[in-house]
Image 1: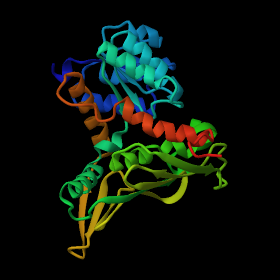
Image 2 (image 1 turned 120 degrees about the horizontal axis):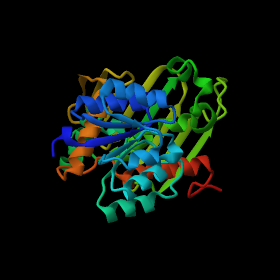
Image 3 (image 1 turned 135 degrees about the vertical axis):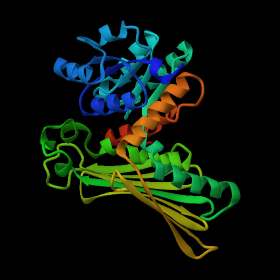
Image 4 (image 1 turned 45 degrees about the horizontal axis):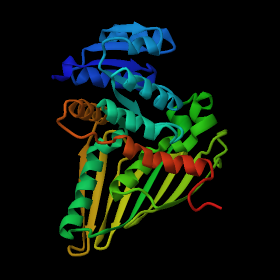
Amino acid sequence: MAVKDHRVLVAGCGSIGKRHAACLYDIGIRQFVFFDPDPERSRELAATYGGTTVAEYEEGLETDTDSVYLLSPTRLHIPQAVAAVEHGKHVFTEKPLSDSPDGAAELERLAAERGRTVAVGFCFRFHDGVRRLIKTVRSSYLRSGEIGRTVSVRAMMGEHFPDVRPDYLSTHYVKYSGAFELVHDLDLAMYIAGAEPEEYHGICGSYSGLGFESPDTVQLILRLPECSASVHLDFFQSPRTRTLSVLGTEGQAVLEFPSWDEYTLRTYGRKSGEWKTETGKTERNDMFRAESENFFAAIEGREAVMCPISEAVKSLKVTYGVQNGCSPTAH
């Protein structure tokens, strides 16, 4: 089945819906149905990429589409995904999987029972710099190579949200999710470590004076089976910073990718005693196109889903636990 033959219901036509629609069109999708509570948004995308619109999500599920892209508010992801699978659809849902782990196991069971593919959009797993970093780390595992065995993973992500969204005070983030919305970097820390945390601690709060009712700062510490990890997330930092560091027994690897269009990967090994530096160019939409290509390849049985429900729920358990004060070791 060629990509162009897939028929996609896009549920949610805001900014992320527009990005996914553009990327789906780029990789060859030509059969669309669009839904958004604001019908003008649906009509705009239908006019741009072709296809039809529906007035209700349930109406969209009755169409002859084979896949659903859930680009709706986080709290709707699991119930909408369950409904889609029950209608025989494959599901791609944006991150995070939900605002609570509740229902995730049932969705996973139902998808397996019905033979449907469900993928979660942790697009940075497809970032070229992250892929190079992971190749360096995992090759070291295999051959006790340049940086040796991983001992610690450090992730930092911060940006000045008013610069990104001048209307930030009206966003969902400011009232509810805050810096927990930057969950990509928690996911990457665990993805690099290759395991789920056995223990985690976290603190969060609003410290910047920018008017956040939700946390503008999150600090997490994780104990994994063979290493530790620390994750810092904030919505006030200038300039924008995104760094992943992997500390090994024989050196370290540091990925810096604060911008969408380039990255720097530096690797140090004790044997060489020198830093090796690589740079690369990227486009923001590269990740979105790659994750969709993986999704359709998984539907066709050619690849495994890069981020299935079982992976997405790992970060969800941590963020939900910290937000609700129920970390396994919290008192």
